[in-house]
Amino acid sequence: MKKIGLTIHDGNNVLDSVSLLQSELKLLASDGGFEVMLQELTKDATFDVYPNDDEKRLLEFFYVVEGQLEYTEDDETITLKAGDYFYTKNLTKLCVFRAITDVKLLVASPHPTFHYLAETLKLHKMNEEIDKVDQYTHNHCERVQNISLKIATEMHLDHDRVTKLAVASIFHDLGKINVDDDILRKPEKLTPEEYENIRKHPVNSAKYVKKIKYVDVSDIVMQHHERVDGSGYPKKLRGEEILLEARIIAVADAFDAMTTERPYRRAFTVKEAMDEIVKYKGTWYDEEVVDAFVQFLKKDKLI
Ligand SMILES: [Fe+2]
Ligand SMILES: [Fe+2]
Image (cartoon, rainbow, N blue to C red; front, side, top):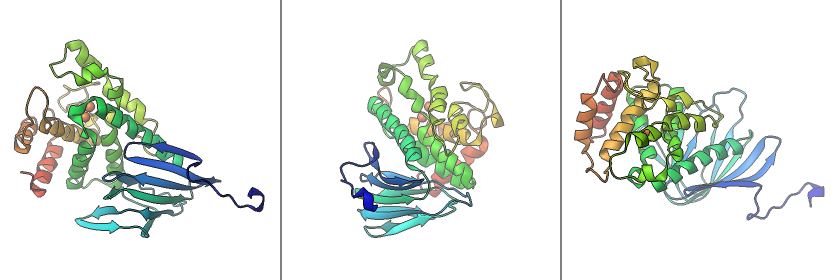
């Protein structure tokens, strides 16, 4: 029926798709940059809508076909159910939606976005692969992202920085995909050579995030193990030579590592981990970031 301008498609035979454990993105139709996609999310998966204040951008439209989504802003939570919809135009802030059931979301965009989203989804997939090997750090990146964004809120960072921080924190450890599974899994202390192997991961993470076209977070990712006194790696940067976003991730990362149980030690309590981070305030960790971090713990009544 193409000759009369009508295209009927079998839903099992979409133009393109990329799938993950927690979500699947299908490209249903595409014409001259206009795209219609179906995003399928499993319960608890998150869906990010990125800011774009390019004046020439037209609105992007999202329609909930099935299930329920939740959006929280300033302590107010809005639930979207089947039939509800939202759209964005000149969005100034990253918006994170959470699927509270399995969700099907129809996305219509007047700009080509599928391959950008697909690229990001592939990186999420690498995160899942690392998670499978490194059981002890399961969901580490999501937690680091969460804590990093809480710190950013306390520090009143602008939306550009928040977006970069969100992307960099979720993908900071991607380079661990190049580390031998045996090393990642090893419960005992690592040998100097094994440790050397692990220390390459920030550089590799930076290489992978270069594939994200809409935002460049490679330097932030590269610097997440730097310490303000210059004792970190890979470049031994000091103080403000380290990007603020990387200084934030360093604190969130350390906190999550300490509060997670390891085969050779129990998990620290929140208070113990906080004390440890405060102990290194100004030497390993940025003073302002640590202050904001402590403030967030108090506000969220975690201590
Ligand atoms: Fe790391
Ligand atoms: Fe990490």
